[in-house]
Length: 324
Image (tube, rainbow, N blue to C red):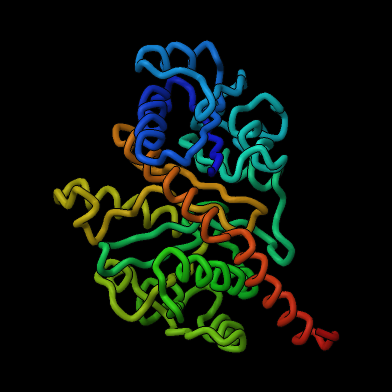
């Protein structure tokens, strides 16, 4: 059995669609348990309307405060112990749940994961990993918005490369992921320069392919993991979704542009999946994100992260002239 804590958003986050997604996930997986974390006054009626009962495989964990969009998520999550996303993270931290899924703001889920779960040893910042592309040409993009700033060091990009490659190995089943650095074109090798990042990545034994333009990311070929700062990655994902919607490339199973639901917050001590898509598709997004969380738990995603980061820590010590 796998136990997933699901953060129930407020009215602006379509909680009824999240409950629908949970219902579909429970029907599809008889080994799944779910804790629905949110105000019981909201969750209870939604379950009753759908003929669902809080029983052995589904329970309501009461949490009174929902973090809406447009607020200072980091400050709010830190100050509100009763925030749904923070309660869900505590269930994960305390071993009650094996993973958590949030359909609320990305910033809130990232803040709760960072503040409640803490970083894994060797991780200096979280990152959001998103799978972009069609089933035949999938790629991992990170950071896709866990940290909004554009100031990212070569070491932090290398950390993203290590975690992105580990994620691609289990998510895309790529034995030796090819890693590239997102750039605006030939005149812009990336920030910081691709050479410094490439040297660090190559020293760790990864296949660094150099600068990658957005067109390559969309069209596919030559790269499995694309690195970016959080601001640029978030903008790119938003643009890809908008383009996919405008040109009618849905459903996403046939789209080469539509990012998949179920972005992973990597670098934290737990499995945290964020549903970051169109609100009207929240039900399918939640179902998919829960399945992704279950798969990550069964694949041992957190121990894989720890092992990957341990190699990076050893590499840092060697570069600093310290004993490995």
